[in-house]
Every structure is written in C-alpha cells, then in structure tokens.
Image (cartoon, rainbow, N blue to C red; front, side):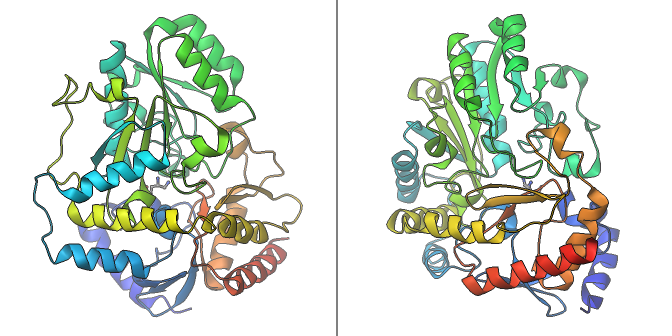
Length: 422
Ligand code: HOZ
C-alpha cells in the first residue's frame, strides 16, 4: 500500500497539532508508523487519503453501529440542516430523543443531553456527589470514562496504550477522591465499602469494559455492585457510552438484567455526531439545575444535527430489532477460529484478540498481552485492508454494514496474519 499522502499530512500535522492528532489513540503510538489519514467512509469501508480501502472495525470508536453514511442518518442530518445548525434553545426533537432513550432504557426516568461521553461521566459523578452529599467515587483499573480529572486514574484506552498511570495536570486532591479497584474483584469492592462505605457517593463502571480491550463482567459482578451500593446509600453509575444501544437495544443493563441509579451514554446515540447523555432515577436527576442545586450546562447541548442523527439511529434500531442477532452472528464468525496463545473476548459486536493465553478478566491479565506481537498483527491486517484500533487495549466493533463477504475476507486476512506471526 502507498501511504505517501498520509505521511505528508502527518508531517504537516505534527507542527500544528500536539502529536499530529486530535485524540491520542489515533496516533499509532501503540503500534508505530504513520497514522492513516481518512478521506471517506461508506458502509463497512474506509478510504484513506491515498485511495487505499479498508474494512473498518474501528467504527469511529463505537458510534457507527450502522456503518458509514447510513441513508436514514444522512437523510435526518440533511433534513435538520435545512432548519438551522444550533439554536441554544429547546427543540421538539430533544424531547423526542429523551423519550426514545427512556423507552429503550427503563432505568432512565430523566435524561440530560451533553456533547460527549466525557461530559456525561463528569456530570454523572457530580450529580451523585450532590445527591448523596458524599465525595468519593469508586472506579476500576483499566476502565476509561473520558478525560475527567478525577477519573484519569489507572485508566484504560489511550492511557493504557501510552503506559500513563496518572496524568500530569490533575491535582492530587482530585485523584484522592477516587478509589481504584481491580475489575471483577468482588472482595476488593466489599473491603472498600467496609472501610469507607459512608463516604462513597458512587461506583462508576463500564459494564462490559471496552477500554482495556473487551473484558466482560464476571457472572454476578454487576449485581453485586448494584446491591452493595444500594445497601450503603451510594449510587451505581453504569458507563454505557460504549455499550449503550451496542450490546443490546437497552444496553448492557438489559443484557445483564441490572438497574443502575444513573447511566451515561454517548457514541451510538449520536449516530456519528458529537453527543453524550446522562440519566437515571427521577429523584436523582431532579438535583440537576435548574430543577436542583447541581450545576451543569452547555451551549451546544442538544445540538439539532446531533439529535436528528441520534434519533434516526434509535428509530432505525427500534424498527429493526433483528440487527442485534445479525451483529452477534457476524462477530461470532469473526472470532470462531484463533490460534493457541491468542484469547478472544467478545460481547455481541464488541471484541478483542488478546495476544496472551488468557483468560483476560481484568487489567492485570490484559496487560500481560504481548503488545509487540499485537503491533505486528495490526500492521499485517492493515496491509491486507483491515482497519483495527491501533492498540491492544481497545475493542473492535462490528457494524450492521459488515457483510458476510467482509467477514470472510477479514477471517482470511487474520488467518494469514496469525500464520506469519507463528
Ligand atoms: N473511548 C474511546 C476509545 N477508547 C475514545 C477514542 C479516543 O480516545 O479517541
């Protein structure tokens, strides 16, 4: 493949953008080489600046459940564009998307729209503090909840890829409000509540972790979190930015039968445009200004284009429930055959090939993966026209646009690449 234009663009980019990218994981730092600059997406495919074509399993890091430029979403955006790009005032579609979210996720009685997953988690932990009158937040190693100051402690995603345990720029006083525990560690959670239960405002968790690679919850883990928070007057926040409308229409909480106090959403609910949301129990959400004393605001919150795209996405998913079975079947085909020494974790259409014999159940086991081998695998797949996340510690996403032929080609590319690593 020729990457001359990507290389030239990257050379220009590093002069004016930190690291040449607008989000660290895009920089290929986990795998080396020049990031591929994308020019266009269509269905399951991405086309780069040099005209190379890829089967895309990044899917813009999760939002593109229907693939690139799905006609229903394009039409909704075009339609909304005719009426204006931002009003900074309430609109009918905001009410409709709030109702659509409530309808799909019954634990959400009230919901507030924001502009990103980071805003959603930042606001949710603030509301939990305001509601409980307590300061501490429990999070789990390898989970990533956006770049919120107090949540950037032992976080996954780009932090894991770059090997940054605690970022510069966060005052110690902020990190000290965060208790970090191993994911899936029942005993550690019980011990933390025994010691500090009366001071814990919330537990925030990715119900299926996507940000240390895909790591599912151990049986009963989410239920235990739900019970222990309820018993101690703390709130359970499911961070469903990645899993919401992805692992099931009602998210991971539908899949595992959990009723959290608060939920954060993003990615899929914007149909590929910037959006986030947090919502949950009406008594808790009533604390949010102007109803209550917890302040949170945003000039572009409920942006008409993002809301139109998101609403089209949610309506399409509701009208086509079979999509989830198809996604599951396609993803199962992709992961059916892996060589010894590679572990696949998969929940629905989220999956990761870990270069480690497994099992991978938490950050300790995820980080034992052979990242040098992953790096070679990534480049072998890229050369074969398969675009994966450039990090061992991210999930791949299958979309409804992936065809049986895409999957067949990907499996063949993977078999060849695994063979070359052996
Ligand atoms: N949470 C996303 C993937 N782990 C973020 C993508 C990014 O950081 O750019």
